[in-house]
Structures are given as structure tokens and as C-alpha cells.
Length: 193
Image (cartoon, rainbow, N blue to C red; front, side, top):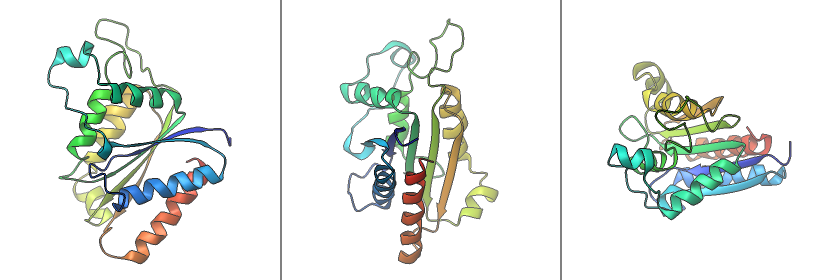
């Protein structure tokens, strides 16, 4: 299993390497690299994917070059690790624009009028969500809808399954908890999970 191909996607829109999402991505990469896995990393904050604005663009438009490169990395990977902060109950707009651009018809799912095919079948995912609110509030009061949108509405539709999640709540409260989470995520990288 050491040769497993893993794409780590830091979905924080701020390119500052001091962001906790960037630290989590780095921890996962360290663990996976130590286990001999093949790793690629994309930092959404270093890209500038515009949102898809029309149906015609989504169905047949030409993606920007950086999105074509991201699609190649997704196609290469066996396992996707997606890390993002919860903003207004869901993923930040820059990450949503990234998925709109990359998970187009013909790449992630078959084109309209063709038999329905989930074109990224065979891949798995780990989603790591950070947030200021306590994890139980997100799960039980808000129903984790921002996470479910990614799991079911994007990944599952494209054939990426299973998509396991790790929810880190109250990330602003304790440096000690952050250190524990970084160790936990590094261990996930080592396990390729």
C-alpha cells in the first residue's frame, strides 16, 4: 500500500502558510511521505479559479490551465484529502469555485444526454473540516449540511466513495488541542486514510 497516490487539497482561500488548514495539509503530507506514499498537493488559496457562470460553460467550456492541471492531479490520485475551514456553514466560496471548475461534465460525471457514469469511481476521500463552533453543534444542531454537500453532492456523484470525515471544532480555543490534531492528521497520512 506504500505506493498509494494521494492528492492533498488545502481548501483554505488564504494562501498564508500559517493558516491551520495549511498546517493540517503539511501534517498529512509528512505522515504520508514517511510511509512512502506518492503525494501531490494543491493549495486553493494560490489559485484563482473563477466561478462557473453559465450552464454552457459547465457543460462544455474550456477550464483555465490551472484547473486542467488540477484535473490531471485528481485523475492521477487514488485518494483525495480535502481540508477546509467552515465558513457560513459550508466550504469557502473559492473552494466551491474550484470544485465547480474541476468536477465538470465529462471529467467527474458523464455529459448530459449520455448514459449516467460516475467518472471518478474507484477513488476514496478524507475530508477534514475546521470550525470555531463545537463539533456537536455542527453535527446535531446544523445537521452538518456543509459537509454533506461535499460528500454526497460532489464526491459521491462523481464516484468518489467512501468519503470519511474528521470534524475539528473549537479550533481557536487551545494550542494544545491543535498540536494533538496535527499529530492525529499526520497519523492519518501515514496510514493513507
